[in-house]
Length: 407
Length: 140
Image 1: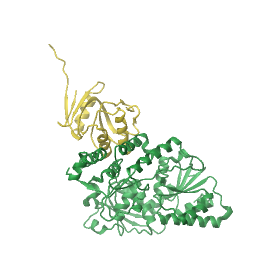
Image 2: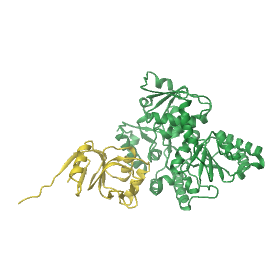
Image 3: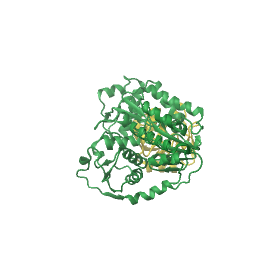
Image 4: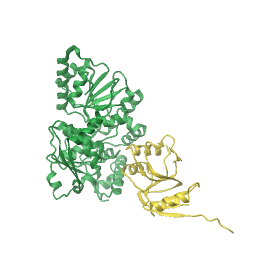
């Protein structure tokens, strides 16, 4: 593999042991995948930091590499970790919480600035910028919406990229691999949950880059949900979307698609049914914020919730339920505080830096989950083995406060 | 004087993480999940016994992205295999091996290798030598 002068010196240990080790891994992986050179990245985003996922082995590695002098060489963010607060008084074991805090402490020392699954909100990359991101929804957003370039970095590779500011140049860092191979003609009516559509397209496209034509997104929220779902069932780091991907016209020029799918509202209905058939009993977690909410979304959700409780008055009874709104730190201004205060007595929590998906909700006695996120539903039902229900965001809130469980 | 016949097989390999390794061969004709299939506290691969200090020959790694951390953790406890030979590499396996200084090679002649291991090594102790510089795996 061709290495620049700086990279040679880094590999030889002139930038410290941790950077040398990290670069050695990246070079070996790159060579095995046929990469001819490395690429400088401006932003690394680390995933796999929940103690419940990576366990003692992961904790040990992260602490070791930071103790060996591993510090961020470029702007670095990380995924959110397990939610540390209680659910209706039930908490994770103190030992587990302490180990999670040790991981966060090590990552803070490494130089992680934010803990969120929407790094494109905390530092939006420019068109053409190279990244080393590891969170599937974020990688899809960066490539498909912003025209930045990132593979889905596996396991510890994004962490190693953070320490070196480099990753191997292959996959969608190369223009040829950004050209779509599968065509999806989409004709869906208004009001269809695009989260379900993402799931279907992800399954059909597999690891190939899809081209999605004729699909209109009303707002960023729909786009986020769509891409998050797509990343749940597919390995592709990118989708070329008509009217959304900045260079979509160039990317599809001259492409003759062999695989073509026509998808309409009917294709989605059977999926929706599957996600709405669960019987929900016991204590319920209502979840909004997968992927994490932006500031505007947070305020919108809180305002709506306050509107519902002010209208509902004393008739509102949230016993056996809790609402988590998940986002990242940095949004707490006076208006948000006022809104949160009005909702405290209704078991509403604004959870920062946390992720319900990686929280093993069964351990804190959550019996079921109601959410607007197809991605969250899909993972939680598998990881925490509890029933989930997906509803539009407004209906999650209405159901939560007004106790209308049947949709 | 009669000298006992000692078979010796050579298979060409492509080094990915260089280094030489020697040890009793453990042959697992499937993809292994280092998170689910392995007791990382004791270095035991379920259904196959101890892997510590042995030369592991298997199809490749599958499943969880925690795999590299498990390999690293095994190595810190001196429970890791001495080397790995696989049919297919993936980024996570390479990561684990580089971090833990475990030689890793790809056996392009996989069917030849698996034939030798299935026929000659089944039910007996085979010793393998992985010589990355020479691109060779020697089975005795």
